[in-house]
Image 1 (tube, rainbow, N blue to C red):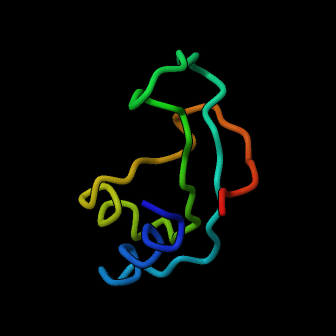
Image 2 (image 1 turned 90 degrees about the horizontal axis):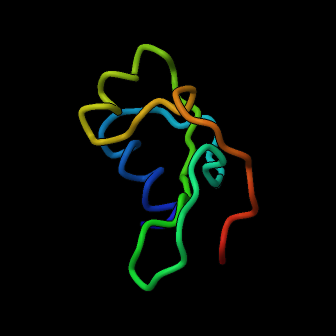
Length: 74
């Protein structure tokens, strides 16, 4: 899913997205293998009162992991 698609999913479900950016996890190591997990993240700034709705959609709170912001792929 692209950053734009992820943001649109939130908005389509009534969750206002104030900012979106890409990140990568820094608290885990990922082996390089085709089709394996990468640690890439899609990050969205939303209102605190919308967190439960975002969790219901499968999103998770970023403060529970370590990450750094990176440029989004084209």
